[in-house]
Image (cartoon, rainbow, N blue to C red; front, side, top):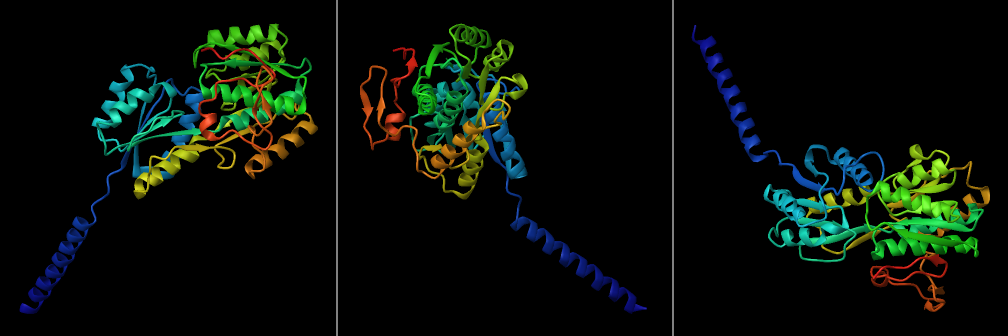
Length: 366
């Protein structure tokens, strides 16, 4: 009668041994907590424009990394001192990566970064630097040049319109590149510029677009965040380009193409670097080659085959490093040669660009 009891004891001992082994294994391999990644938005994503493009990039990263990251978004944060409170709160909550996605956040985000050296702070389109603070951007001037090329082929009036937001180097670069792209295929083209001194103001954007159309512009482009320019172009039966994202739904007949930004390419790279411990504060400025921007969604009903062919060739040349939109010779509005033949503007010069090229009808406010 003792044999069965012995077998039971042995079985229990085996189970307990396995249980302790499992517990020990669990203790040695505790689940790694997700990396906190926070994004601060100037506006709300909506369904087009600057913040929408960033949100698409964030969603792509969420899909890629799953439960390895925990994403926090803060929307409608003004570019004012109050944004410091937002960045400080995100840092205090332990986020490892904090991203300010608009130019005006720069100084406020940098101030917080100095108090939280263990977190990585990234700032879009800025120029300042600290050990744990760096900038990132996309070379929108490349897609602006391509848009100008298409506009130069398409215009009937030789007058193009640019709805400018804020007169900072980023926007000046885009205006210059658009103008040079247009004049590379149509030397008679000119670009009229109207500033609204805001990144997002649908009312002023609409008013500026209407004024430009009234001055003869039959192709518009913008460096603003709403869809008002595209909607106005659709209503007035002229053409336009989407900016930051595809805006075709707001101007199915008007849109010639869209200067789109693919922020997900960089955000994926950023998270991977931080997780691997290889992140550095070197500024990042990606373009067509890295698939961070493009002129996409070409309206083949409105863009001629010749324009499409020229567009494809110029895009390929930029990707291959065989063409630079800011390669000389380049003259300014006054006819002075600013970039000699055989030379190109260096990134440092592009980042502080404050003059218009020949063919621009407008001024850079001081």
